[in-house]
Structure formats: structure tokens, C-alpha cells
Amino acid sequence: MSRDDLFRAPKGVHDVLPPESGRWTAIVARFAERARRYGYGLAITPMFEHIEVFQRVGEHTDVVAKEMYELTDKGGRRLGLRPEGTASVVRAYVQHRPTPPWKVWYVAPNFRYERAQKGRYRQHWQLGVEALGVADPDIDVEVIALLAGFYRDLGLTDARLLLNSMGDAATRPEFVAALRAHFVAHGRALGPEFLERVEANPLRVLDAKVPDWQDVIESAPQLTEHLSDAAATEFEAVQAGLRALGIDFELAPRLVRGFDYYTATTFEFQSDALDAAQNALGGGGRYDGLAEEMGGPPTPGIGFGSGLERIVLALEASGVPAPASGTDVFVVDGLGAEGGTTVGGLVEALRSDGFAVDRAYGGRSVKAQWKVADRSGAPLAVMVGRDELTRDAVAVKDLASGEQVEVPRSGLVAWLVQRREGRAV
Ligand code: AMP
Image: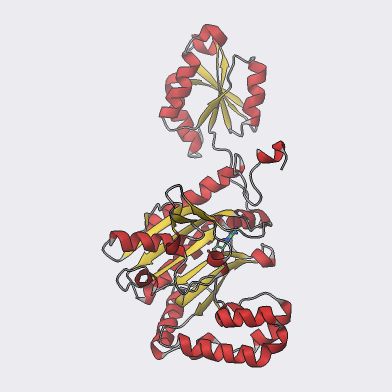
């Protein structure tokens, strides 16, 4: 690797910088607000865990078995960089034993050694929620409604909801056996990779994208036809709850999603604005056995994770405009050195009054400052010049129209507030 390459971000990861990060701020703020309204508190868990948190018995998925970043620290501990959010949150639940129901949200980076491509990175961020300790189908509906409303608020109107049930522990083994028998009987000619996958976990074959496998997948038995009475009733209740809230969904009997811990309700939102191979905006489901697998009490749980980068890509592809620059006001210094601290004081005062204020630095000419003001994205500039100072006033310029008015210094904050609230002055 050349020296130049060493000082670039590694393959598959990237920086998020202004102005692009303005979109990230807006998305995370909306998610935080939505989670708050639904009664979810923020959970911050470590970026790495003992490897067993992710690598549990029965977890054979690619994300854990092949893609996890594993490391040994200087104390010889075997650690894994978090490849997904749910396992860490459930570990925190098992460790701290909060009183259920326990409803938390997170925004966190995940690490997966994937083939890097557009929409698929080796570090990606997820927004998610987890609700532990509630088996009621109403919480399934709540979690899905939270995510549906979040996408709608953002302007992602083409997000389609796919819904499935993975059944319960009572019927799963019977279904898995029927599925394996079907694949072995009809897929023998598909080669060793197919048969290996069938052997490891036939459920994972259901959402495989390999074109040659599609016929045998299409004709496979369907999970929803093998549900126990309890699981079928619960699935019906989730569907009825979604219908009652006017949330459209499609039944997707082959939706299995990426983790072995899922039980009962699973769901995924897909966007047609994204490339087909990476069209999942977010998804999740129930994982009623996971807390127990980590030594906790039997605890039902449901949650989802939604990729932040995917949301940004979908917003861009759907033509949703990015939020404007965060600056409300650009202050132009027309006094120079003789003004002393006048302009600095004005900038600080406006910031204290709640405005996002920027300025130029380094004693630049007034002309140069106006150029910076135009580039700043701020809708307004406030200029303090010698003339204005004698009248204890400032000049306020609308940077889009070029219109300029003089405003008494003492009335500036009120003027800006009125303007921000869209009232005529
Ligand atoms: P998963 O944890 O695999 O269920 O993925 C949840 C969501 O995270 C997906 O729907 C995507 O939006 C996003 N996602 C998963 N893997 C990646 C990745 N490698 N790069 C970017 N986004 C990802």
C-alpha cells in the first residue's frame, strides 16, 4: 500500500462531512423525536462485546459467521465489533434487568466485512428500537407504526412494508424439516453450495438471490401454512392492528431476514428508489428466545434496525431536498479593527438568543465577507457599519432577494424571530 493510500479511509468505510451530514443530523433528530413520542429511551451500548454475545449457539448467519470483525485485545479477550444492534441491547437487558416493558432506541455504527458496493459498507449506521418484555401483538404493531411513520415524515412515500411470521418454537422444527426435505428432493442438481446451505439452515435458502435456485424456492412449503394455532392467531392480530392504523403491507412468505434468532413477526421495508440488491431500508422482527440464550429470564422481544446510509440514498433517489444550511444569520463586520469587540459581541449575543450565526475571520475586507455570506447558505446577513453604529442600528439583508433594511440594534432579536416565524414585518 502506498503512503497516500494509508492516509485514506479503508475500503468500504467513509466519512460523513458537511453539508451531507446536515441530512444525517435531521434524520437522527426526527428519529429521536419519534422514539420519544412512542416512549422509547436512548440506549448506548459499547461498540465491541465479548464475542459470545454475537456468536451464540444456533447463530449461523453470514453476518456473524463470516463478516464479523473479530479481535483479541492486549488482555487476551476475544471481542467482536458489533455487527448488528439487537444482540448488544439484549445483552444490556440481561445484565441490568430493567423492569419490563423496556423500550429503547439507538443510533450506532455496525461493522461487517462485506463486499463493499453502493449501499453496502463495512461500517454502516443503524437507527433502531427494541422493546423487551411484551408479548402482546400491539407492540409489534407499535414498532412497525413507529418505523412507517418515520419514513413517511421523511418523505419516503414509496417504502413498501413486507410482513411474515416465522412461527414459534413449537412448529419451527417441523417446518424446517419439511423445507429441508423439499430442497433435498428437488434441488439435488443445484450443486454443493446449495446443499451445504440446506444442510446448515434451510430457512436461509428461502431469501437467497441465486437465479438458478428460484424455481425450487418458489415451490417450497410456506412458513405461514405451518403456523401453530397460537402463532396464526397472533399473526392475524398484528395484521388487524396494522389495518386499523391504515398501514399498508404485503404478506411475504419467503421473508426470513438475516438472523437465526427471529420468531413470529418479521418485517422489512423496501424502497423501489434503491437498487434491487440493496433495496431494504430497514427491518426487524420478534426474537422471543434471545434473552434466554444469553442467560436471562424468558423475555419476549421485538425490534428493528434501519440503515442510515440507505435512508440517505433513498431520499436522494426520491428527490427529497436536503435540509438547508444550518446557519440562520451571517454577520458581516463593517467596522474592522476600530470596532473592537462590537461585532464579536453581536455574534455571541445572537447565538445566546438561539440563532445559528456564522461570520468571517481574519479581518477580511467587507467585499470578501459578503462573498462568504452568499456562500454560507444563510438566508439573512446582518451588517454592522460605521453609519449604522452611530444610529445604534444594523443593516439586515435578505441574501436571496438582495433587499436590505435598517433595524435598531435593540429590536434586532424580535425582528429576526418574527421573520423566522414567517410573519410580515
Ligand atoms: P440487518 O441488520 O442486516 O437486518 O440490516 C438492517 C438494515 O441495515 C438494512 O435494511 C439496511 O438498511 C442496513 N444495512 C445492513 N447492512 C448494511 C451494509 N453493509 N451497509 C449499509 N447498510 C446496511
